[in-house]
Image 1 (cartoon, rainbow, N blue to C red):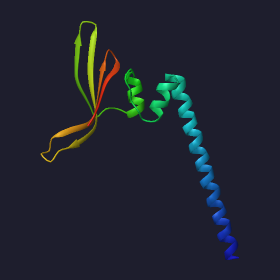
Image 2 (image 1 turned 45 degrees about the vertical axis):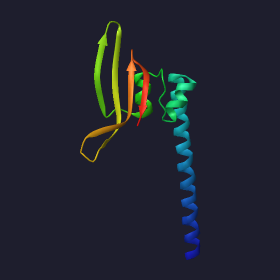
Image 3 (image 1 turned 90 degrees about the vertical axis):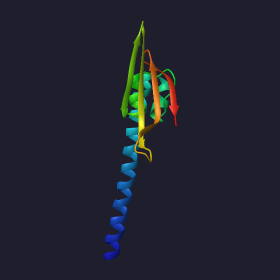
Image 4 (image 1 turned 60 degrees about the horizontal axis):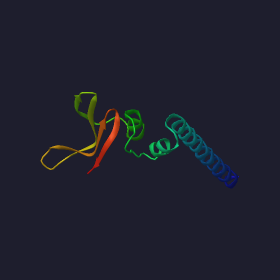
Length: 116
């Protein structure tokens, strides 16, 4: 009787595991399709992989890396704007805050990516 209970519990565990994996795959595929439909195949797949590349918009940056830890200076000149976004902050031994990733948008598109 005890052996039957153990087999039953193992079977339930296996079924739950496979259901969870199937559910994760379904969510992943939905997210993939949504990003590709929204941004096109190249940018959509890059965003899905958590990658940022030159030419992406602010919305694409947010979808790939999330909201920045800090927004830097905004420079607006004749028909041109530059905004710097900072990601992944850390403290130095002296207590200063530095960032591992810096992204610069010119005219609302990623023009430079610095990874320290």
